[in-house]
Image (cartoon, rainbow, N blue to C red; front, side, top):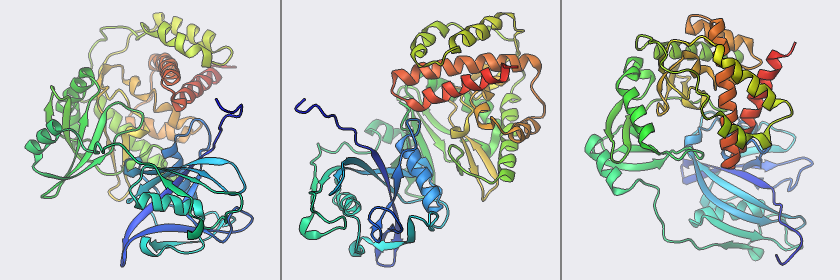
Length: 460
C-alpha cells in the first residue's frame, strides 16, 4: 500500500426511473429541500443501505417505496452504471445507479423534510440546478458506460457546472451480451418461435440463470438454466407431476433439455412477496392463500411412509462453518435439539416445493391471485418442510400464522411441530455456513435470527 489509510467509502443506490414521454425518454427527479445537503438541487431518488443484511437491490426497492411510493420488482431492476465519486468538501463514496422501466404506483414525495418536489424531465433537457454527482451518473449512463470516476476538487460547486465537469468514463472489454448462448436460444425458439427481446431476470445470489423472453408474435416465457443436473431433474419432474394440478397458480413446462439443463416455462403474473408491503387485512388474505397453495401441493399425490429419518448427516460439516458466527449458547441449543430428533416419530412424506418462501411467491393484486415459482428443490418429504423458511414471515404475527393454518385446512400436529423445529435448526445452521463461505450476510443474518427465535420460544 502507498498509504496507511484504507478506503472505507459508503455505498449509495440511485434509481433511474425511465418512462416514454411526449418528447422522448424521461427520467424521474426529485428536488432536495430543507436542512439537507444540496438543498434546492435536483437529484435522483437515492439512499444508503440499511445495514450489512441488505443488498443493494433490496435497498433500491426500499428507497423507492419510502421516498416515492412506488413498488419495484427485483426482476425489473437493471444495472446502469457505477460511479466512484468525491464531493467538493467530503470524502469519496461509491454510487450504484440502476435503471427501472416498470413499477407499481404513481411517484410522489413521501419524505417532505428532505424533498419538496418530484417530476419527470426529458434526458435532452435536464433541469438546473442539479447535483453534479447525479448528473455524472446520468451522463455516464447515457454514454453507455458501466463504470466512471467523478472526483470533484475542493472549490468545485455542488451543482453541475459544465465548465468543471469531472466525469471520466472507464473503457470496457468487448461486450459479452446479456442473452443466453446460441444453443439455448435455438432450443427456445424451436419451442416457442422467434424471440425478439431477452431480459436477464436472474437472482443475484443464485448460480441458476433465468431470462424473460418476448416473442415476435406476442407472448412471454421464462428460460431457466439449472446449476446442476439434480436441480434440473427435480424441477422438470415436479412440473410434470404435482405442479400440473395447481393450474394457473404455477408456470407450465413448455420444453426441457437435460443436456443444456434448460427449461422453457410459461410466465406467471404478479410481483414477488419478498420485500413487498401490504395493509394488514390484505396480508391476512395473502397468507390464507399461501396456506391453500401449500395444501394443494401436499395433496397432489397420496402420502407415503418415510423412507429416511431427518437429514442430520451434514450437521457437523455445516456446524463447523457456522460456529464463528453463532451467539453464546447456540451450539448447545443446536446439539440438544438435533439429539432429540432420534426419538421423533417419522412423518408421512408428500410432494413438497422445497423452497417455499416469500421470494418464490408472487401476488397479483389486480387479479387477486397467488402464484408459486422455482421448483428446483422439489422432492418428497414431510409437509412441514415447506414451512421452515416461511415461518420467519409470520414471526410476531399470530394473525398471519392463523391465516396460513386456516388456508391449509388444519394446524400442525405435535409431531409436526417437533419436526419443524429440528428442520428449522438444520436450515439455519446450513444457511449461516453457506452465507459465511459465500460472503452473503443476509443468509447469515436469517439463520441467526431463526436460532434466536427458536431459542426464545423454548425459554420459560
